[in-house]
Amino acid sequence: RIYEDVGRSLEDENVLFDIVDDDVIENSAVSCKCGIISMGEGRYDTIVIPECSYMSEKSKAILSEFAGNGGKLIVVSNAKKPCIDGAVYTESIKGGMLPAALKLSGESEKIRLGVRRCDNGTLYILFNENADQRTFGIKTDKKLFRLYAENGNIIECCCDECDFYLECFPELD
Image (cartoon, rainbow, N blue to C red; front, side, top):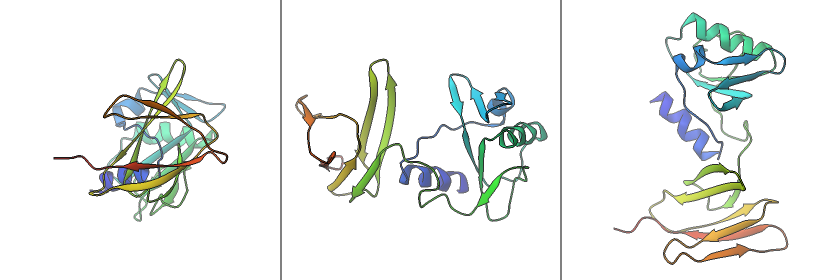
C-alpha cells in the first residue's frame, strides 16, 4: 500500500517517474562527479524510495554514493526505513517538493499526465480519471496542440498568457 501511495502522490503532483527494483539499482552506473545515476537509457538526478523493510546492502551503498555526489535521494517514510546515508526523509512528497513536468490549474485533481520524448519534440498526454468532466488550465511556455480523439482534428492552442482550458470527459460506457 505504501508503494502505491507514493506512486499516486507523484502522479497527483504531475512528477514523471520510472519504477525500478534492487536489481536495476545494483546494475546501474553512478556518476561520481555530478550525482547522476544511469539505468539503461535513463539518467536520474532524483530517486524517491517508499518505506520498505528490506533493501540490500549493495543497493544502499549505491544510493548512498549517489546522494553523496549530489544526487537527490528522498525516502518517503515516517519510520526512516530503509536507513541510507545522505537520504532526505519525509512523510509526504506533496506540495511541490519535486518539479512538475507540466503545471496545471483549476479542476486538475486526478488529471493524469503521460510524457513521451520524440525526435522532433515532446508529446504530453493528459487523461481524466474522474467520474465527471473537468476544466483545467495548463501554464507553459511551450507551443501546444490539442488532438480531438473523436474526429482526429488537431488545433493549435493560442493565447496571450499560454494558459488555456481543456474539458476532459470520463470514459463513456
